[in-house]
Amino acid sequence: MILAYKFRLYPSRAQRQTLDQMLRDFCKLYNAGLEQRIAAYRMRGISLSYKAQASELKAVRAAGEGLERWSFTAEQQVLRRIDKTFKAFFARIRRGETPGFPRFRARARYHAAEFRVGDGLTLRKNDRIANRIANRLGIVGVPGDIKVKCHRKLPGEAKSAILARQNDKWFVVFHVEVAEAERLDGETVGIDLGLSSLVALSTGETIERPNWTRRAAKGLRKRQRSLARCKHGSRRQVKARARLAAYSAKIARKRADTLHKLSANLTARFAAIGIEDLNIKGLARGMLAKDVHDAAWAQLASMLDYKAARAGGTIVKVDPRGTSQTCPDCGTIKAKRLSERRHRCACGCDLDRDVAAAQIIHFRAFGSRPGHGLQNSRRRVAA
Image (cartoon, rainbow, N blue to C red):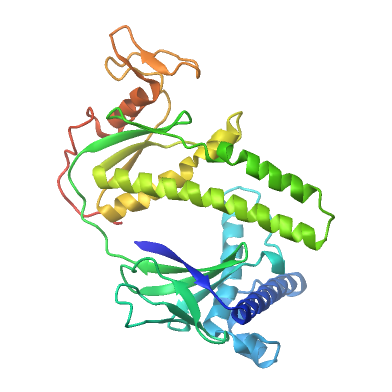
């Protein structure tokens, strides 16, 4: 299981300018590699591979176009990025989809570079700070060491890292491989993802949806109008766009923080979690698209998936059809309008609609009512 750990970087002004130049050179290399592939196929009918392009990299660096000052392996990753793009393009064609052809990248939208830790990117440890992995980062071609905000320790040795620029801030993302976990035995729960409540548990608990977008609507509208009034291409427009991007990023951080805490709490309490296998893309095209995007169901499901695997738990996805129309006590199916928020059945069952749906999800996932635990034996699963 490979986990990603993100840390904030604080480069100096000179380091920031050098990092910007590095990304510009990598973007130029990416576009040149893409152009070479297109020209080779149009002129000679040859499909270039990564190996063919990587064999010419030393000659390109020797030509003195500025690439020689950066990490050789990082430039190899740029060519691998092109190769992955073409492989994904042809894979979508084989699946019968109609993908867009790989495009050239603008310098202003090329924001990341991949490195091998120890080869192009080095962690500098500080013995005075015993509880931190490092507080400095060395990158080939960048003068001095870059300050790192180390707020937690890595659970293992990082093999690769991604240097990223987001809203004029710099981050490093380390990839760490951790061992698979032992499956735990314990309580099970069904979870219903909703809009009135972010999640409802089969135990009867409900978690209110914070409505991040609605709370931030006034500030977002103010910054969007400010941007719309700016003259195109002016410095004022650049600043207004940066303020809007920073505000949107703040909303995204609040959403991610809430979902991280919620998913961590659920995976710590329950050994197995049943969840609906929703078609979120389809729901996001309907009349409730704004609320569906704000609830971030896909993000929550992804967090539950990897955190449960790391904690030794498991996630079971079930068919979502009819979960809110079925009685959890007698199994009677009764259609309800979306405005009906209580489930009332002739058998006497009276529950919150979302809680009733969560109990149906629990039954479909585990074949038992909430609180009975897993019936299978302890065994190892791939995390």
